[in-house]
Amino acid sequence: MSLHQRYGKAGDPKTFLINMKYSKNKVLGETTLKILKEKITLDKQVLILINKRGYAPITICSKCGKKETCNSCDINLVYHKSRKKLICHHCAQEQVINVKCSNCKADNKKISLGFGIEKVTEEISKEFKNISIISLSSDSIKKNNFSEVLHDIEKGKIKIIIGTQIISKGFNFLKLDSVFILDFDLWFYNTDIRTNEKIFQLTQQVSGRTSRDEETGEVYIQTYDTKNYLLKHIILNNRDAFYERELALRKKIALPPFSKLVAIILNSKNITFLRKISIDIKKMLEPIKGIIVLGPIPAPIEYIKNEYRYRILIKTNQAFLVQKVLRKYNFNTILSNKAKMKIDVDPLSFF
Image (cartoon, rainbow, N blue to C red; front, side):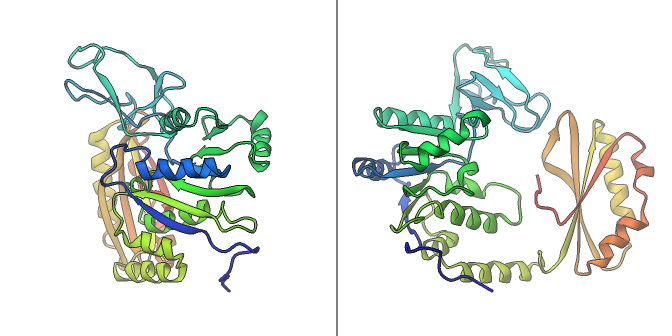
């Protein structure tokens, strides 16, 4: 069964692209800002989606190029201006910002690159000084006043809502006129084989915050790649065509639902031991007919919480072989208390 029309009198929201190629402001394009001002002048309520926490994802020394990274993970620290700290979003380690570069010893040469919800809120607040604004992310939402904030949004008291993915579903904002998606292009930078599907779903979810009553809402997407095929389906709101293309692509390269995947993630503080047992496990699996063993390779984030990480991926067209593999081998015998293993059937994450 499929639904071809949304509930209520309003039609599907209209989607428009904002080409950022020639924009001087890389956070809020000039066209975006112009439309925002028009909406606020008309006393409309708008939602701005920026799916990144903190102020900036990268802090770097402008003299020598050294990035601020987590001591326990192979990842950049995120600058949270509101807390005046650099924070790892994987292990939650926090560091106070040191004005002196630990590499070249230069003073006051650190700069922030990219933008998160805090920076967007800062820029919006400068442009709309007398307008009610709220910023909603997992860092800012407090359980004791969130219901009060939602009440103010629903009543139209707050005109500009700035939020991460947390605000994309589950809320019924009848006063909401428009949605602005600022960082659409960055959503593609991950290792998930379901990236296109997830982006399409997220865009549909956030678009669904508009057109909740009788008026048709509008969605504006900032992008540098206006010819992206996914955007074509989003603009036309053509779910069937998108899923048909996505399924055809997955069938061609034998990805789910046309195959079964099992991920083996190995962790160890000893990188030499980890490499050895990863190869040993692959050799154990390879003789099994009907499966393809991919890897081992270092995980996309190779080092988390002071442990190295390797991944092996099993692909098969026969689902019963997965259980056969898991029952046949006692992997604990080769882990030797020096490594940990996680087996993820039908993995949703590939980091």
